[in-house]
Image 1 (cartoon, helix red, strand yellow):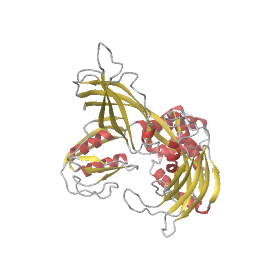
Image 2 (cartoon, one colour):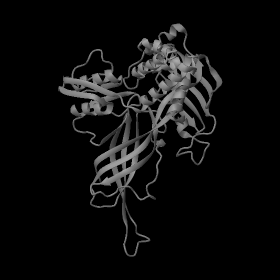
Image 3 (cartoon, rainbow, N blue to C red):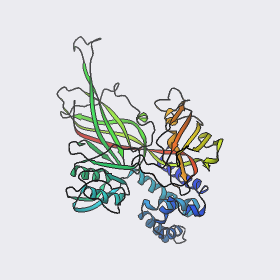
Image 4 (cartoon, rainbow, N blue to C red):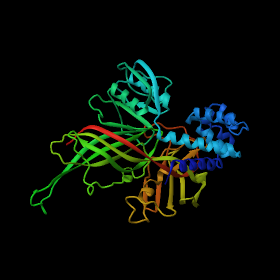
Length: 480
């Protein structure tokens, strides 16, 4: 995994387009691929506007740039493809600037919801949010109302109460929470995919929530530890008493933003209702690193905490707490090793930029048609990145080896992915990992089997990430 600035990440994403362009399915198969289907949905005027970027008339160039930006992130696939293909320096320069800005905005800005609904159920409101954002939202039952034909991702539920919903360019998480609280609903724990599951739960809620761009911070619990100094006591002051606390929280990202973890959390301000500071003394306020919270595992939720110290015994509330944290986002992937017809490959070595693959075998499971098993060993090349676990031994990086299986993709001829939910066998030492990974057509979340063709390509991806620093704030949290 690589960390880089936003602009560097975009450049790498552009490189990914160029790399992928050299290894595509045959024309007949490419026409059926999901990426091609995505491009067909884009406004056909994009191609002409890209050409206009190279016009000799600067007014036409400027107008074309404004018109392309106005179309938003939906045209990013086309702009990346045009960037990889153009030989015009002026077009290349303008496209590069445009793609960088769109990619940055896509990562750090929330999607906005604008709708006005009267006398609608929670399910119907979620259906509208699904249409606007493209996010998959499943209603698991309760105050949902009847099914809505033609709206993918909105399932389950029964006839329920009608409500009014009004959102005018409201950030996604605020809109979601308004709908959920109105209907007495909550989000289920994330299953590691991009689907949000909503269930009816009248008896509980999450009252302490903070929003920061595309992220939702949910305070989960706070615990305390009281320390009384019994040795080396000040002769005049007597035993000193200090209470240290940990406030734990969950960070949820919008489905568009897979996270790999967070950096340390820095408390900016923390005060009780009496105005007293809750920030620990400098020597106790350890700067913590939270890469281990999900071990660099790709997901849409992760966890963190902040250290606090109560010095005023009478304090009962965190009046305000403001902190900042770097959220590590998966900003793109580059196919580092591509293995075609993996069913025909055995005991072969492949070398990428950061990894060497000793490919053992990829075979169909006996008596279980459509299910496959991969066996390989991956060795990390170069010096591993320092983190909390390997800062004293630069030869080991267990975060890398434990999550390597997530970087493996198996595709059929139409570009559809086989599902994998983790290795059935793993042996690693931090710099190399031997894996046995099952792949199949079942979606663990729904239990349904996708209609997939035979596997024709196996990819080992390199992950690129960017750290986006955000500030969040909690108010009125009770102290233990």
